[in-house]
Image (cartoon, rainbow, N blue to C red; front, side, top):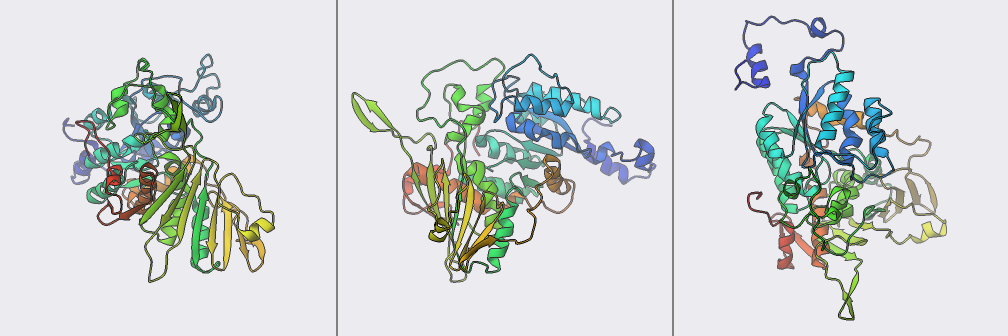
Amino acid sequence: MPSNLDRRSFVGTAAATSAFTIVPRAVLGGTGYIAPSDKLTLAHIGMGTQSFTELAGLLANPKIQIVAVCDPNRASNNYVEWGKGSIRNTIRRILDQPDWQANETGCPGGRDIGKQVIDAYYAKQRATDQFRAVTAYSDFRELLDKERDIDAVKIMTPDHLHATVSVAAMKKGKHVVVHKPLANRMYEARLVIETARKTGCATHFLPYGAGDGNRRICARINEGVIGTLREIHNWSNRPVWPQYTEIPRETPAPPPGFDWDLWLGPALDRPYHPNYTNAVFRGWYDFGGGSMADMGIYSLWPVFTELKLPSPISADAWATHTNIIEEQVSKRNKNDFAFPAACTIHFTFPARNGSPSPELFWYDGGIKPRLPAELDAANVEWPIEGILFVGDQGKIFAGFNGQAPQLAAKGKIEPLFPGEAPPRRDGGQADRVNVWLPSFQGGPPSPGSFLNASGISDAVTLGTVSLRAGRKVLLDSENMKITNLPEANRYLYREYRKGWEL
C-alpha cells in the first residue's frame, strides 16, 4: 500500500474495483469478528484520573481501537482521586491483575501508564485481533500530525485545553468526544460549536444522559403539571477540591517527565506549581470552569433542551470572599484569579411567545435555596445536591439529576411518577460509549452533539463573567457582547500565549 494512502482511502478504493474478492467476515475471523477497516480508531488525549475511570468502556468495545495516547505528563503517582486507591484498583480490574503496582502508593496517571494499560489489555483480551502497540505523545499537535489515519479523538484534558484540542482535531477531519465543559470561555465554546457545524465532524459532549431524570421532569412540566414554570433552583456540593485564595508564591521545578509548557497550552506563562494541576485546575479562572462547569452541565443541560431555553440574557452572581492583612490592616482580598468557595448565580432568559421565561438559580459550596413554605411545613429535608422547579400551580423537587421527583401541588406531596419504579441507571461506561459510537461510524448525529449544547455552554461561561465582574451582566447573545459593563467583555475571551491563538 502506498505510504500516502490512508486506511479509509484504501478501503474506498478497494470497494470500487473488481480486483478484490469479497469474503464474509465470519470466514475471516469467526463469529463476532469485526474487520479492522470497521473499527473506529481513536486517540485518547489526556490520561488523568477521570480518563482511567472511563477507560474500561472504550477498551471493552470491539468496534473501537485506541491507537494513541497523549499527555504532557509521562508517568507519576501524584494525581487526585475521590477514594483511596480507587484509580489503581480500577486499573487492576481492567487488567484483571490484583497485584498491579502492588508496591506503589498514590494515584497513578500519565501517558506511559495509559499506554501500558491499553497495550496490556489488548494483548490479553484481543490476542487474536490485529492491533499495533499504542503510540504515546506528549504534544497533541504532534499526535494529530503523525496519526493521520485516526478517526476520532477523546479529549480528557483540563478545561482550558478543550477548545484548543477540539478545534484542531475537527479541522483535520477527526470526530470528537469531549468531557465538560466545551470550553471555559464563551468565545471558545461558540467556536467549538461553529467548527463542528462547518466541518460536519461527528461530535459528542460526554455529560449527555446523566441528568435524564430532569428531562423527564421537564416533559411533565411542559404538560402543565405545575402550571407556568417560574423558577428553577439547582444546587451542588461542589467544590470538592481545594479552592485557593492566593496565587502560589513558591516556584518549585516541574516534576521529572512533566512538560509544564505543554500543560499550559494557550494560557499565559507563569511558574509551575502543583496547586494548578490535576483535579485542582477547576478552581482557577484560567484553567477551569468552576463548580457549575463541573456539575451544572450534567443536571441543567437536559433542562435547557427539554424546555428549549436559549442563551441567557443576564447573569448576576453573589459569592463568598476572603480577607488578608497587610501592614496590620485587614482588607478584602481582590481575587480575579480563582472561583469563590461558594456562590449563587441568577440567570434570566428572553421572553417566549409573549410570556416570561423561567428564572434559573445556581448554588454551590453548600448554599441551598430557601425552602418553600409548604415544603418547610411538611418537614421536607433538602438533600446535599438537588433541584427544585417552581410553578404557579405547584412545585417539583428531586435529586440533583432528577432522582425520586416529588410533586407538591393541591395541598399534598406525592411522587411525580406514582407507581413507577425509579428509572434504571445506565449500565456504566460501556453504555455511554454506545450512545455516540454509531454517529462516529456514519450514523445519525448523537443526541449529545456539540450543536445541542449552545444554551448551557453560554450559561456556564456567562456565570463566570458575572463572578469576575462582581456585578450583574447583560448579554447581547447575537453579537456576544456585554452591554451594560463594557470592561467585562474581556472575560468572554482568553488572552493567549503567542502561537496558541484561536
